[in-house]
Length: 201
Image 1 (spheres, helix red, strand yellow):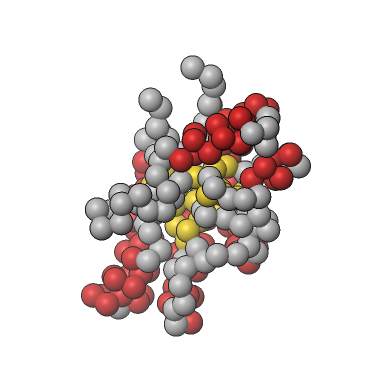
Image 2: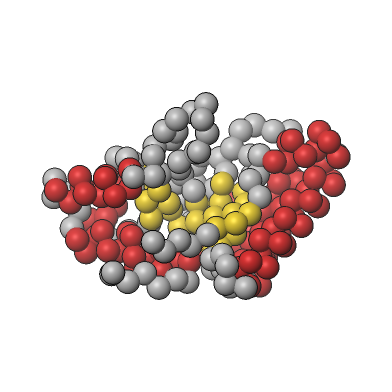
């Protein structure tokens, strides 16, 4: 089994941390966490960073601080030549294109977790997303994910880790995608996006 770690600081931590130390210090701590994660990327122990902003409504000052943390992650992605996985609100997150441009990271290496097809970023779609077959037929570059949360209180949320191969097999068996589509989704696109070499066993 080959695993490609993605390390970072979950954007929801800004709420928890700011209650203990204030918003400005919370943002600094989160940036320091991303700096540490980037060290693992530099050492070859991880392939990407994870950052973002709360996917729920927050006060403007919290959103601004979260965007500052996200900008820092994008700058680190540019500096360390790695992808950045974006955990953010539903929708296209089009403003992140400009943020990525200012940071100097190609938008193709900014991965929108739990994406919608209208994002200009690299979409990572939940494996059961109804538009996967059509997007695959159109030759769109995207990846598939489970968004699995290992929480005893929420077993199986959102969908389990085996869902990606299971849904892929279903799409293949029903003729909704081709083997070439599956290769693009699970090998070619993640290889290009994350800078890894995914080859058949």
